[in-house]
Length: 285
Length: 319
Image (cartoon, rainbow over all chains, first blue to last red; front, side, top):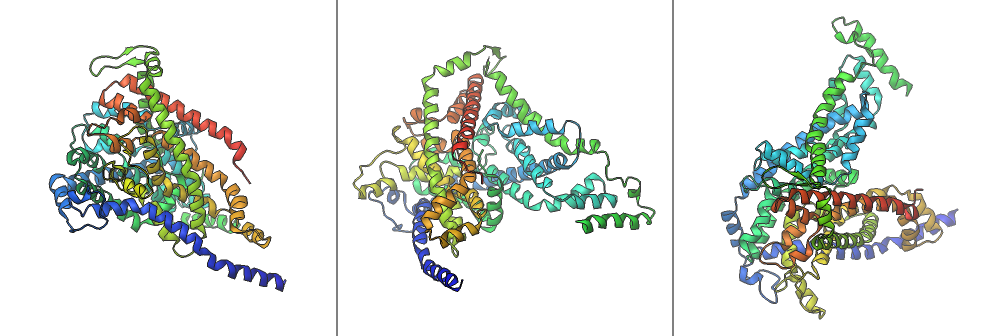
């Protein structure tokens, strides 16, 4: 036994320094991940002439912030930012409310037709979003909501996925708390609000992050629903820059940087919620 | 367990002596839920019916109609589908999407290896995770713009780097021979972070005892990876594969940002299914034709997913 322990200790001691090959591989991979961002950041401080020189320079010769001045003076960044944030807040708040209520009912309140209804939700979950776009567009157009903030947010407030996620969360919670509250005279809404919702906080956070990320990044729906270009969120405005600035790469890179950085900061602050959100469900689609 | 359940029984007894509490009246735990269920479910059901179920049925109906931009639609039977299947543009888009999806799948083994390596690291793990995740929280439009610059044929970074190895300059996003591969590289780069997080959750569920036992038997890290990590991770790998295929078949943003504009002739030969759908339904406003593309997309995704579930039996290991 002693021999065994000693052998294991030796092996462990021998294994410890061997983490450096892992770090080498991971560092190389991480550098590849970061190079495009680094190149973007270096480019945005160059002059247009320097950015298109062959062979390229690595560090900017004359550190110039002209690209940012050009970007902010030609692009209504703050109004686009406000639209992006407004759509995100509406969408996340709406989806949390709708999905938590329905998810609780599907998990805990027996009613006739519950399974069939839930089956319909699951069916919706499997349909790619493009199948809804034409009808959603017709609906927004019919309601005269094109080019408005509500049009950006409304479809995303309702989500079969969110409902499903909340139902799963409520299903795993012990029934005892609920029964205790009920015996104390709480009605269903009170049980939901005071007992169940606080316990679902991690799932609510995960759903917020996923919904927020999707709302912030989405291009196709905002493109469709803001035809005139008024009230466009950041992705649509940024995509429009390309034609406007052509080969002024420093300005294009500066614009891409400025529009991306808000969410990157939020991510750095709330890493745990982002990772938990992604792990709990997987984004995409 | 008993102590937990006994508590609530005791409390209402005390409460009931408090006379004014109306709760005493409906203290029955089995309060009929029908009324409340309606209140709770109504917003979700109405929203999903109006914004998802109806649009879905509308897309389905329109795929059998000729829908002019103005005026009433007319039923045309299978004409849209027939036109679609004999449209070389559609088949090109179909091939491009399939090729892009195949390239994206090559990123999964990379994600598996990297996720396993990150899991081995003690200090510094958080830094790696953040770096790999950055593209996930960056606007896809911004990513497209940056890569478009890197891929530029005249002064892009990629050509400069490749020239060190004697590779001649190419127009990666202006030459239709390369565009889909160029998207594929960016697609892998973008999704590595998400895949690694999902796989990381799977890795943490593998019992540590298995590694300890096998290292006592003298198994090295690589053998452990091949014989323990990969087999036990296959359910997570399968999940990531399903998600990746669905997402890849819906690729739109990159092509929109990287190919549009300045008389890029490569766009015509590089369209994906969803880009073609966008163009037909929302630029040219042929809603009927666009709807047929959407229905075909649904069928393609359903078949691809069903196929993977069929294939999983031969490689996914449920311990």
